[in-house]
Length: 402
Image (cartoon, rainbow, N blue to C red; front, side):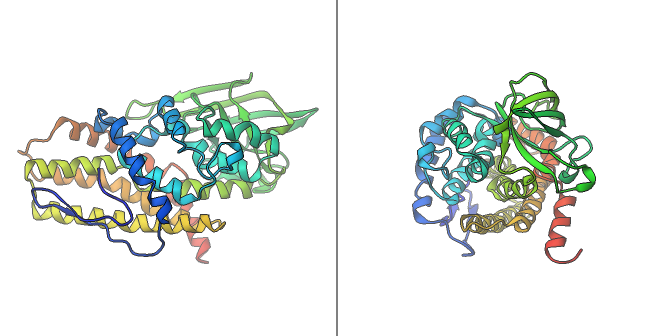
């Protein structure tokens, strides 16, 4: 495993490859949070021992409810949530450390991922007392898995034009519409959906609200979508006169846009926007060490990738510091997400090119399988959490350029 801890020391192989990540001191992970790294790493070393790298490369797209429940038993879910609901009342940095270790190890985190990263904090901030009492303890115990209902067939990254509508009825809401590219909707218990509760699409941000949808209700059809790698992470979800109770609404009606942009800050700022290709990078480094295939070109490439990773990590830590101060760094998160996913996407291409420079060199099956998988899924990295075109528009507006 690459050592990505904040005070990382040089790691030197027998063949002489040195990896050093030197902090830029933009922000620092508090020592009490950094202290969590060792027990998490030891837990993962035992739990992940026999899992091949091509499976580990799926990481935050790997769904394993039993693994999520083991994390919950360690007290590593719902870290920022109030203790009275089963949380630990720790800051964002505690979760940063745990998430970084989970993704570096290639742990299957998809089951609890959305609930822990954003649904739980969203409910804790905007939800009613009854919503907090019902959902938050279940999230902390890995008993309630969530998905995000944002994108639609005619409203991908342009969330303001969503057409799914929730209309008030006596005692609740009637939901009609469709969501698409919803990660693991077919395995989740609940969806937090951005819907229109008043006005029309021409009203843009006005009239949008967030609701919690129990995915076991009548009138809901979920169809998994198989990707190029043969996995079924995504789904399309149809709502046909789905009847929801009054307390399905999160926060106040019409505040959905403000709430969802805060939620996207959680989604776009974490280390998951940097580490999707890390298992492949580690496997390539192992290949260099085992084969003594250390050309000047491979050394330069390795240095480039590690330095980029270190820089992006510092930016992600700086974002975590802003979140911990109660700020909503939407533009900054968009910038890190754009740069991070570009970095993730480049890794399989650069490693494939490096391997091709030595066509007669033996390449292990695990490395080839991992490279094949990451190459196939890498185009999706810049789609998750908003396309780079939309993000760059946000960045331009934030800089006053448009």
